[in-house]
Image (cartoon, rainbow, N blue to C red; front, side, top):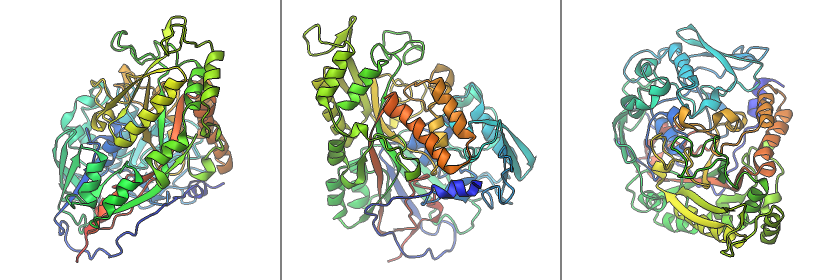
Length: 575
């Protein structure tokens, strides 16, 4: 099957209750003609370098400034961004033997500092992320890359170790933007986190440039004077407010009109509906691949261990390495009730970490029925009993006490309370902890509270993948991508899962061309992480719910890329 067909065939966006978007067309005119726009993310960005954070809030904020060569549109289809066309086998951009992809850059592109954007920046970006000492959070995007070479100023060639039917990992989507070689030249390897100016105020090709960055607070941006379209962006300045909570963010757009765009309104459906009655803003929503899950730490997070050894492979977890224990935790959860409580029509109970597109979604449904008594019996069978009479099961002197952490959010705290009760019913001791989302999803290697560092037994959050092919997303769970001190605690293998069989299957997926066979392998990988190993417990396939002012035109909600992907096209609607 031709490569373009593979990528296009999986594209699908499932919309639910999608509110009408503004229909006015942008009248055009001078850059900055519409003044200021306000964006609020209740999880505040802590960095503007996508390669040093796996947090969605950081990656999306950065997408206003730094851009990839290609993106995915609101249907999941690949679209050219800093190039004139997406390379394919048909147009000669992808080698017939699938071992390379050649990107031809648009002519005349400038960085925001006025210097030329060239293929050297593309090559540098790959080397920056692939540096083994750099701790690149998006390393899975470069899975199987042998080299990136500069053919000429406007041509970069990516060569893979073997035939790669889906070559759109590097430089595609908001997780793999291009950074300027000149600015980051002295920021490679272990020095990467130390370059504060570059990480907070990157030079970019996007519609805006950072003028002031206050970590975990406010970002002030202005229109990029060297943006490639002289009539864009329509807004001269952006105030990007971070922090607070989802309810306050929703009110700021839907009721008070203080801000123009609010991201990720993780609120109960009735709360959003009540806010929308204010008539100031419009909720928007669509399904993509966002899954709320519980990650189970397969390593020991005990504070009694030396710093640098906690939550690393050097110390397996004392009881969560028992597959029957993990399975019992899953069996005790009523996922359908979680959906009802937290999301209503904006959620679907799921056992899959890859819930969409439909072609790639496993028929794994075994977790959807709660079974408290079955969970108790399974723990009994595994030898975990309450020998101390304190209500907490134990074995060989180890008690099953769990520290369960997540970010601070009303829906997540409701989930924690319900799940704590269910787990205590089957014999676990459960302590709850919540961390401000700006910190939890930050990339600070010195913080003990990030989701990557995982200094807890289990933790709950959600993420998704760019585009409609889950290859790079599933590759994040290979053995070498676990966060650890030598990677600056970056990496997306959050629960430290490691399986030679899984790694081999990821490699097979990487060289499989036929779409249906890719789907078969992707489902096997999904099931290895969920149904077979229970190393993570998917809970809810979450629809993306955000909101924008009724005076903000041009907004197109995109669940396959950054929500801010087309901010250059936003404008103020005239009354």
